[in-house]
Length: 375
Image 1 (tube, rainbow, N blue to C red):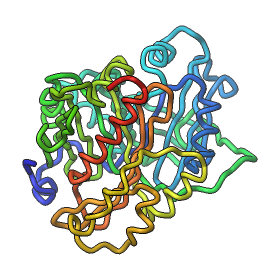
Image 2: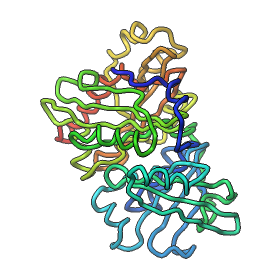
Image 3: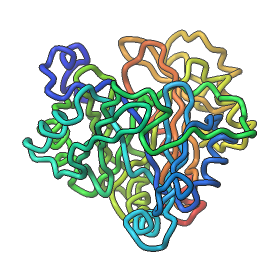
């Protein structure tokens, strides 16, 4: 592992694109009404806002779901033609927008486009009775885009054009707090291109790097670099496949997504034992590791607050760095194409990303690939 820049160094770099965090993640899906029900039932999201034919939007329907600081938007096409339908046809359900919360969406667009970003959406003022929002956007890897959202003059549910969505079906939340990081899979020999994009266009810094010696099993390997903005609120690890005996999970993703795209969203919790137990009871399926993983866990990571006898039945992984430790677990893909999945993570001081768990995690992924016939 090569530490390119420490987290303290990142905080001192002059930031021409100050980000306040992830504003929302928007998914283009085949059936947003059903997907919204799934995210409410399985992950504990709450109904927030809606836009569609009933609100004057004729080409799509969008359901906004929230949980603490998380905001997911599920958008489906109403007609078989158009960019949303094309996206779903090509990729299946997947992430279209990683929206970033800013104080000045116009300046964010100007700063990034003058540094070489391809514009997706010029600065646009959207108004309704609750105030105004300014949004702008740029393209990133694959068909994924970043939208900059300036909402300091708005007090509505989500965005102008959306109405409050009230439902009689309101499952309890599951303790999911906010987006910890979002991981993108890019093609062969593309990682450094996109690292340079985040450095040059968005002012991010490469805070961690992993090569195929760090992330490999008997069969497959990949490389990864973690990009962070100045205050560390937004982190985008970028994965690239590496040569191995068999097809890596990144190659499988690229084959089935038909493009580069968001591989997984990592969501923070303050009580992973409770959250994962709850999610499993709701039907969320997680990757499993052999129980032998826990035999020498304390020798690897040192003393932890949790009881191994509580972690092992759930399959929760533990890793450490110089600043503490973290607990993490990964879902299986949440649709039939083996593409998008989720990570649940609890940080106990650690700023890293679970390097010590890569081998166990990737072997678990390979077992699933083999069951699908894609290893």
